[in-house]
Image (cartoon, rainbow, N blue to C red):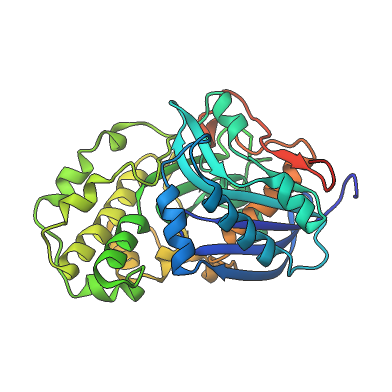
Length: 366
């Protein structure tokens, strides 16, 4: 493997929305993006999704064999279809996240995956950051910095990821490196797609609100947004992160509403959380580029744009792939870990100093 210079890195991401696994090739030296490669997606079946949903909130030592089999099989199947990868970044499946409690738990065995693929695998990206007092999330910001450079940004901008949980990265691309003081500020904004997806699955068995069609037919319930924004999370200064179910009470708040009103209200909560989070940015961003599944929800995008004072657009408007940005991020981070470069810093996770997280497992070393 080349000691320096760009590598063909393959990244994989299975998010808290439990829809499936994204995989993407990236050519990177860990500092700069040199090119984008093939991508693929492997959805979870309803049965697989049910197994993973049943494992949410569990920690090592619990009975997780069935969930582990789902994770390993899905990743081995998808990643095994790529050729030419020199290193793999494997995030695993987050089941529980308590950075100032029991820690963080991503299910998945990178050593077993390395054996199955015959390629070195970097995994367990978050634990080192948590051990040093960080939130362990979000981790994509160092890649966002590289993306800002790739698209030629010359002013601060923000990347907004609307996955199960929303997270925001404010980037100043004029800084020399992502770990430089003032280069990045990142934090979770609040719930995004997870409560809405859960609602649609429970009531309509669809898994998500396609294009925001259900929400568009409804009205936001009176008083619910105000009570939502009273949650103590919004009073905390960033960096800060959330577990997928930290806002479990929002589902109870819409339980008596019609499908459409419940969807509209949960969508408005996601947008309100983003607007509140933007107040923490060191300087107004020139624009907000949106990634993750939420950018396909037209109502969510409209509500977010209405609450901000800068242009809001999907990352595709800047020539990036919003479906694969997180998978690409873990390809990029894998190279950084391999080369001992930081993957998080005080501005992204609140960790005491810049740290390189992750474990490298090579084939035949289990």
